[in-house]
Image (tube, rainbow, N blue to C red; front, side, top):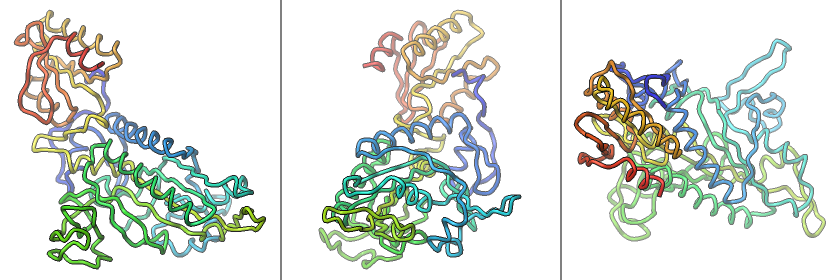
Length: 413
């Protein structure tokens, strides 16, 4: 991609935002705010989201889940069947010109359960796991923290159906491991799994996946030495007390919730009279599980963790491009030719590169923009580099000179 052609450029000045992720994502040209809690993803932001979604798809497929796509417009009658039309306080409701009422999807139990009812007959059809990656709508009273808490946002939902609790528990553990892989691949290494209240969508207990950061909205009581962690709202322990697992002193820190999973039991199966015939020929309600990851929320969480005073530092797995090529002294024809030759070679090798080809911008401005955008590896071609390329990792200060062929060999191998 030529930076001169990229839609959505960096901004020198942006208004003061309450969260770092919003400030940097707006300033670097990844998102644009439409209204409170509503954002447009610009090309750079969309590329990051696509990388995250593809990681999620791979890990969901690896545990046997199948991808579908469900509607975002939900007929009122489905929400009345579960008794949630009046009880879910963040539900967006709308009425058509034909006097029919709908909800804008905040979650999809009311769609997935009657869908599965059309296809499940026997215990032989179970277990079943279906997921989708789509937009969600929640009428948040106060959207905040940039794309961490919006009124419209991206979400991956997985729903599973089981013959009994034991089968659900087995799959539940597989999802936990898949989630840890997803977050790890997205660059979030230290995930705290906490037990928390199910909140609006289920009265049972759920498990949250949290990443520690001062920008977080959740208070965690956790052990720095082992896996023990609790949400402060239901915590049985206090900071300073000893961990019940390893006897290390417990700490309290802020965290961002990036995913949650919970046992729905047979609540929705009963609401829609979804049944299957077991081995003994008796009809039973399937046990359901629900598993969510906020995809746009992940973008914000990653930026809160990975940034410095100059801008974003993307983990390479979710960065919009692998390389940021900067051409300096482009008024020199020889330098310009070397830049375009390198850009063409990299593209031929299927190496994604953002090439700052602007010839009316100073070297300082180009380097500042590169630090702000945060692509993991920066390449510079100029008079000073002669026939080589200066290469530097965004997270490091030391650079070195490298030959183009050597660079391509390293990247392709």
